[in-house]
Length: 205
Image 1 (cartoon, rainbow, N blue to C red):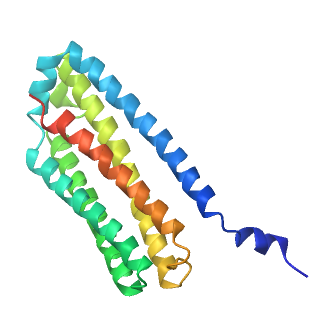
Image 2 (cartoon, rainbow, N blue to C red):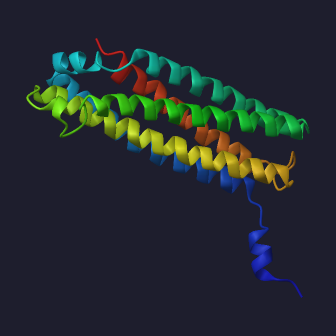
């Protein structure tokens, strides 16, 4: 006699999974789009204050993290190609590299935040007391946007590690790789969002 619970868990609907992921990514883009719109409104009201505050962010951290994420986007794309070609070991290696790059990004962000917090440059911090409202708003948006993005990087890291484990036990295979494909799509979203964050906060003029 068949087990309906097992059959439900074992059900595969690749196209449905892909459509579901694209709908999820759309909601994520709306979320970050709202933050970017809010930034644009306040940047229009306080252009000089935003430019002045932006100069206090580290271009080194911003550009380094951009390089890290772009490299990770390449590695996650290559791992899918490797799996489709039946190169399981290479796929796992590239997934591990992507996860390591995600950790590198989070460590860099933690160091960057730590330096700013040490100097009191955080909402309500002593470093912002008495500053123009535009600069206070800039740092509020900076922490909100990069913090939310950091949470997405952390979520992506967890997903990558889980998929790596599934590849290792042959739950994700060349014939059934929609989980890896969706994980890669999510990771590309994380990268795309950062491409917008970089010029808005780190390259202000």
